[in-house]
Image (cartoon, rainbow, N blue to C red):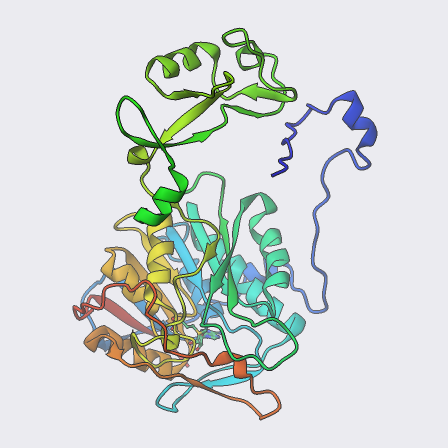
Length: 433
Ligand SMILES: C[S@@+](CC[C@H](N)C(=O)[O-])C[C@H]1O[C@@H](n2cnc3c(N)ncnc32)[C@H](O)[C@@H]1O
């Protein structure tokens, strides 16, 4: 694998400076379109006036809140609330995807429409992202779930709103099973989650997958003679020339050309004394990485185990585009701690909220669909129902997409706990008319 060497600021050599065609400060890229409001205008969005609905949830103060209303105005109201502004540790949103569809639930109830397109859609998203940024804690993270329709434009907008340097990952998720695809294209089984943080200092608990015997056996192929421990061999040098200790000879050996030792020679001596260096028959040193010291396989940016709930025979609410709770578990676990505040302003069936609740986080949910609010109340009270059926987006036959419907024959993916304890400790708020 060819690896570029990151160039630290001011490190450009005379040789590379000659070949650099565009030295100097970087120039920000901005997406330009008609109707793009100023940030200031968005930050001055009139806040929703909100009334408490005491007939649902907890009667007194509660740690969690569900809002029935237009999320832009509700977010503007939350931005004025010191208990929320700058306090949210994780935002996950799964907004409409500009599909030109009207979505119904499994029970044929109208759930929501997704009719905004192009610049109107992007401006809709951008306005919410700007307000969400105000709500995020300095060490907070935001995950935006989209498909290939608008993810590219959203990436450019998120670079503007959060800063290019705060982009962390473009996660590809396998959303459904392979299909009997009739179009002249590759099957479309993926969607995307754009992960940004508010700053460079953010909460991060590296997710890992457990080793399976098969995977461990493939990767850790060597056995330590003395201890019997399984290990793999990795280089002890890294790309780039260094003038300090790590660029000096160790045991009479220089690092390979264009490289440096990963550790100072004195540290390498200590590692060797502890039996952590493997010497090849030709005298080349490699570092031993032991299986029993590995917490698991670090999760990468392709997620294969979180197909949509209604693509499998698992417990669901039947709300359209309902996400897999285990997907939310992975996100919330990676980017927050117990007691932290999690927010989803496109809450839908309440997947984010229920998972946050079960993981002992506080939560705020917003949705403007009466059906979403009804489904969330039912989910909070009674939990999910076992079923393996699909939802039905209302589309004209020409627009209808066979691709949306997968088979439910496969084994279920990662499953989050289906054990249900009724959720009652929330406040219900409504946007006043
Ligand atoms: C894709 S669904 C979210 C599904 C959710 N992730 C789940 O697991 O059930 C998008 C949701 O956003 C809501 N929504 C769309 N526009 C909204 C707006 N302007 N204000 C509040 N909610 C909105 C819709 O009613 C819908 O429930």
